[in-house]
Image (cartoon, rainbow, N blue to C red; front, top):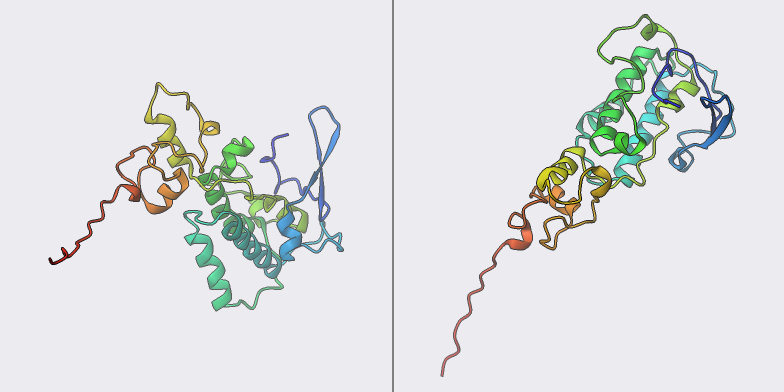
Length: 235
């Protein structure tokens, strides 16, 4: 079932640790929630409150925990600056509106940079997602943006886990896929962060993190020549 449609529009809610999604055949499947929800305390499994309207303080809390999850499980993830600035601003300038209800437009504004990062590190490709964001055209305004959102909707949008993401952005994977049209690497499933595509002794992820080219064996730090000067022994 396409996960990206009508999440905010239809008021879809779910239990704290389980979600039931209707399949095309009308059957139901049960999907476990991300472990980081429990580990970080972002979600209280003892409270079944999915239809409760969420406030700004609660949204800030789960967003902050989501950032910690990405930083912990996918170290070196690029383009976290926007999220970090957002969370840091909450810490430096705590608002007086933490008990104010959150509307769909505000929720989208907080969630969008997370999905930008998820797409960049290949999460969307791994999950087979068609859209960048879990809602329709992100540039088009909607009357629903002023509708209040509930806890179940917020959980749905933060239902991601980057534990098994390798950390290579899609741009680097594409570089490797296109490096040699005659090799057997034809899509992202053939590219791994732990592989050493150019055979220079440095894996793809390390080369990306060091700013070198994983398709060029002469670009890595392993190719640096170190000269040592020795004083000759006297007779």
